[in-house]
Image (cartoon, rainbow, N blue to C red; front, top):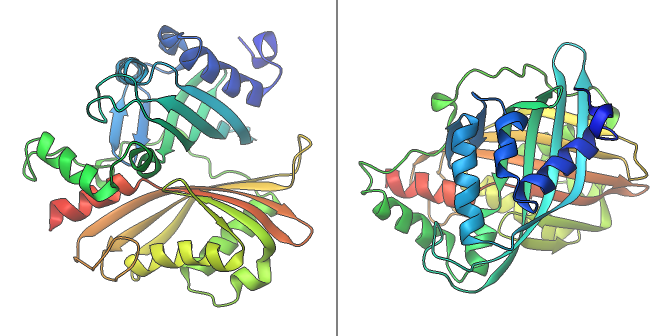
Amino acid sequence: MTYAQQWEDFPDYIIGITKEIWEGRGVDTLNHYYASDIPVRTPMGIQIGNQEVIASTWATLNEFPDRELLAEDVIWSNHPDHGHLSSHRIISTATHTNDGQFGPATGRKFVARVIADCAADGPTIYDEWLVRDYGGIVRQLGMEPRDFASHLISKEGGKSSAAPVFSPEIDVPHRYKGRGNDNHWGSRYADLLRQIMDRSETVFEDSYDRAAVGEYAGAMTRIGRIEMAKFWTGLRAAFPDAEFKIHHQIGMDADMLSPRASVRWSLDGAHSGPGMFGDPTGANVHVMGMSHAEFGPWGLRREFALFDEIAVWKQILMAS
């Protein structure tokens, strides 16, 4: 089956199956939309196979039965040798109706973002990287990320038994070998992130619109260059010597939207500085990050940057 037989194009396919799976309760369609051996990498770990994905999807729907996944954008690329890769940015809304992963039902609502990078061959997704804003979710449910991570460790049997979070050491080989495309906007945004991680003092003044808005991990909205710089400085200050890597980048200028970009990145290194995660502990940490950006005539206008604070805190606490 080709996309044209059921869907208008690749973004329509990604948005359509997401709605069908979650809001249409077509969870069993994952038996053919997801490969039987698909690895789904999240900051909290790695799932192998569509049956694990099906089980976790049902568990989430039980805890949050009114959950909606609203598509903000699909930034995508296609390579003749590597196939399609979509970077799907979602606004997720839900009410904590039943007991589950997040503890006893609170009745509280949350609004949080998710970015999912999916590699597809025809109608089948076979590789996935996904970052949910768990820090933003737990805050809106009345908890703090550090405390929630500590609770998870205890629930899983303590430091010696708790499940490891995702790191390159536990990854499996990628079937998708692409690195995105060479569009100008992807290259431009990747360069901005490198400058930020290299502690450029002028990158925000030179390249960000004065009225830029950042939507960041922790369900935080930051307006203007100064506040957006504080977010990135807080992250980098916590891991001042960590190695920054870009794993995938896409640029686009199409679909009646602003020129935009998607970058998947990571930080690997010690928690050796005071910053977003408190006093330094020396713990070795892997940060899986995903970012989208939109550009306008006066520079970067909107930025979305996600990583999982719970996964970072779990690594810090397990090593302390």
